[in-house]
Amino acid sequence: MARQDNNKPVGIADILVLIGLLIMAVMALLPLLNFNYEWMRWAFAVGAVIVLVARVMGINKGASLRVRRLHLMLAVSALLYCVSALMMFLSRGTNDWIAFLLAGLVMQIYSTWMIDRETQKTEE
Image (cartoon, rainbow, N blue to C red):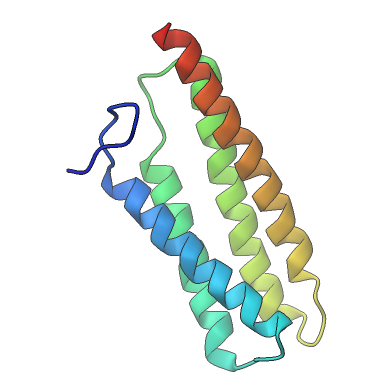
């Protein structure tokens, strides 16, 4: 398996998150550039579900309570991505889905940053 800088092995969940987020990023940018096809919504939804499944798989049960809670926040951010995909289907012609996408993004950035910070504290 490939390794990250901190010698933690990269797992299947990490690879699935990367694939799902890349699909979502491409499919979120294309409607903003006036490429709006029905299959793009489905691809975005598939990417959101992949991220959700990977985040649930990646919850670390052996870590401290704070790190487990931060991993749960990552799963909630993936759930917000799924709500964003649902909003793409329900509110056609509007951009309401962007609010849920950005809320999930903010939660993901915060959680990822804090998980890295907490794991560095425990390694010292």
